[in-house]
Length: 150
Image 1 (tube, helix red, strand yellow):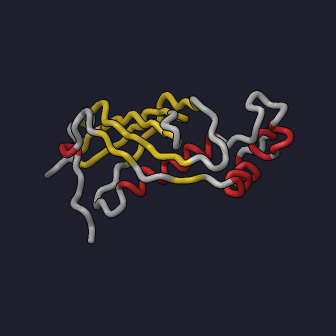
Image 2 (cartoon, rainbow, N blue to C red):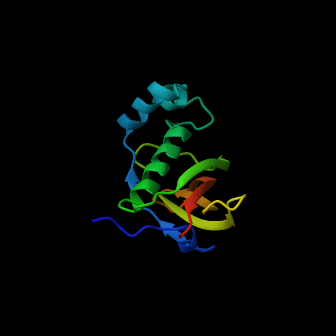
Protein backbone atom coordinates (compact mmCIF):
# COMPACT_ATOMS: atom_id res chain seq x y z
CA UNK A 1 0.00 0.00 0.00
CA UNK A 2 1.30 3.42 -0.96
CA UNK A 3 1.36 6.22 1.58
CA UNK A 4 -0.44 9.43 0.68
CA UNK A 5 1.38 11.96 -1.43
CA UNK A 6 3.25 14.64 0.45
CA UNK A 7 2.99 18.00 -1.20
CA UNK A 8 4.84 21.24 -0.63
CA UNK A 9 1.97 22.45 1.55
CA UNK A 10 2.37 19.42 3.86
CA UNK A 11 5.81 20.54 5.03
CA UNK A 12 6.01 23.18 7.77
CA UNK A 13 9.06 25.05 8.94
CA UNK A 14 10.21 23.35 12.12
CA UNK A 15 8.93 19.88 11.16
CA UNK A 16 11.44 17.23 12.27
CA UNK A 17 11.79 13.69 11.00
CA UNK A 18 14.04 11.02 12.50
CA UNK A 19 15.26 8.03 10.55
CA UNK A 20 15.92 4.49 11.60
CA UNK A 21 19.45 3.40 12.54
CA UNK A 22 22.26 1.84 10.55
CA UNK A 23 25.34 0.09 11.98
CA UNK A 24 28.49 0.27 9.84
CA UNK A 25 30.73 -2.78 9.86
CA UNK A 26 34.44 -2.71 9.07
CA UNK A 27 34.22 -4.77 5.89
CA UNK A 28 31.65 -2.42 4.38
CA UNK A 29 33.83 0.57 5.32
CA UNK A 30 36.95 -1.02 3.82
CA UNK A 31 35.16 -2.02 0.60
CA UNK A 32 33.85 1.53 0.15
CA UNK A 33 37.29 3.03 0.84
CA UNK A 34 38.99 0.67 -1.63
CA UNK A 35 36.48 1.63 -4.32
CA UNK A 36 35.96 5.35 -3.70
CA UNK A 37 38.22 6.93 -1.04
CA UNK A 38 41.49 4.98 -0.85
CA UNK A 39 43.24 7.01 1.82
CA UNK A 40 45.38 5.09 4.31
CA UNK A 41 43.35 6.09 7.39
CA UNK A 42 40.25 4.56 5.73
CA UNK A 43 42.03 1.41 4.50
CA UNK A 44 44.61 0.24 7.02
CA UNK A 45 44.26 0.20 10.82
CA UNK A 46 48.05 0.17 11.30
CA UNK A 47 48.66 3.08 8.94
CA UNK A 48 45.75 4.96 10.51
CA UNK A 49 47.61 4.98 13.86
CA UNK A 50 50.02 7.57 12.41
CA UNK A 51 47.21 9.77 11.06
CA UNK A 52 45.44 12.68 12.70
CA UNK A 53 42.72 10.23 13.77
CA UNK A 54 45.07 7.64 15.35
CA UNK A 55 42.65 4.88 14.30
CA UNK A 56 40.74 3.54 11.30
CA UNK A 57 37.94 5.93 10.36
CA UNK A 58 35.12 5.65 7.86
CA UNK A 59 35.09 7.83 4.78
CA UNK A 60 32.89 10.87 5.12
CA UNK A 61 31.49 10.00 1.70
CA UNK A 62 30.25 6.66 3.05
CA UNK A 63 28.68 8.54 5.96
CA UNK A 64 26.93 10.78 3.41
CA UNK A 65 25.75 7.79 1.37
CA UNK A 66 24.38 6.04 4.46
CA UNK A 67 22.61 9.24 5.49
CA UNK A 68 20.95 9.44 2.09
CA UNK A 69 19.82 5.83 2.34
CA UNK A 70 18.34 6.41 5.79
CA UNK A 71 16.42 9.46 4.55
CA UNK A 72 15.06 7.55 1.55
CA UNK A 73 14.04 4.65 3.79
CA UNK A 74 12.06 6.92 6.14
CA UNK A 75 10.08 8.13 3.10
CA UNK A 76 9.51 4.59 1.79
CA UNK A 77 6.09 4.21 0.26
CA UNK A 78 5.43 7.91 -0.15
CA UNK A 79 3.99 8.51 -3.58
CA UNK A 80 5.85 11.75 -4.34
CA UNK A 81 9.46 11.68 -3.26
CA UNK A 82 11.33 14.92 -2.96
CA UNK A 83 13.73 15.69 -5.77
CA UNK A 84 17.12 16.89 -4.58
CA UNK A 85 18.66 19.97 -6.16
CA UNK A 86 21.85 20.24 -4.11
CA UNK A 87 23.63 20.24 -0.80
CA UNK A 88 24.97 23.25 1.09
CA UNK A 89 27.36 23.49 4.02
CA UNK A 90 28.38 19.82 4.23
CA UNK A 91 30.53 19.32 7.33
CA UNK A 92 32.08 16.21 8.84
CA UNK A 93 32.16 17.16 12.51
CA UNK A 94 33.31 13.98 14.26
CA UNK A 95 35.04 10.81 13.04
CA UNK A 96 32.90 7.75 12.33
CA UNK A 97 34.46 4.37 13.09
CA UNK A 98 33.50 0.78 12.28
CA UNK A 99 30.73 -0.36 14.60
CA UNK A 100 29.13 3.07 14.90
CA UNK A 101 25.36 3.20 14.54
CA UNK A 102 24.06 6.23 12.67
CA UNK A 103 20.69 7.92 12.28
CA UNK A 104 19.59 11.23 10.76
CA UNK A 105 17.51 14.06 12.13
CA UNK A 106 16.04 16.25 9.41
CA UNK A 107 14.36 19.62 10.05
CA UNK A 108 12.51 21.83 7.57
CA UNK A 109 14.20 25.23 7.82
CA UNK A 110 12.95 27.15 4.75
CA UNK A 111 10.23 27.01 2.10
CA UNK A 112 9.60 29.10 -1.00
CA UNK A 113 7.43 28.77 -4.08
CA UNK A 114 9.27 27.89 -7.27
CA UNK A 115 10.21 31.02 -9.24
CA UNK A 116 7.98 31.68 -12.24
CA UNK A 117 4.78 30.26 -10.82
CA UNK A 118 5.42 26.56 -11.53
CA UNK A 119 3.26 24.24 -9.34
CA UNK A 120 6.09 23.25 -7.02
CA UNK A 121 8.16 24.67 -4.21
CA UNK A 122 11.67 24.63 -2.81
CA UNK A 123 12.19 23.16 0.65
CA UNK A 124 15.45 23.32 2.62
CA UNK A 125 16.26 20.80 5.34
CA UNK A 126 18.95 20.95 8.04
CA UNK A 127 20.19 17.39 8.37
CA UNK A 128 22.29 16.02 11.20
CA UNK A 129 23.80 12.55 11.12
CA UNK A 130 24.20 11.34 14.69
CA UNK A 131 25.99 8.34 16.19
CA UNK A 132 24.91 5.97 18.96
CA UNK A 133 26.35 8.33 21.61
CA UNK A 134 24.21 11.24 20.33
CA UNK A 135 27.28 12.91 18.85
CA UNK A 136 26.63 14.80 15.61
CA UNK A 137 29.09 13.40 13.06
CA UNK A 138 27.91 15.20 9.92
CA UNK A 139 25.73 18.21 9.09
CA UNK A 140 24.43 19.61 5.82
CA UNK A 141 21.57 21.52 4.31
CA UNK A 142 19.63 19.65 1.63
CA UNK A 143 17.66 21.51 -1.01
CA UNK A 144 14.68 19.81 -2.60
CA UNK A 145 11.66 20.35 -4.80
CA UNK A 146 8.17 19.17 -3.88
CA UNK A 147 5.01 19.38 -6.01
CA UNK A 148 2.18 21.67 -4.93
CA UNK A 149 -1.44 20.54 -4.77
CA UNK A 150 -3.52 21.13 -7.86
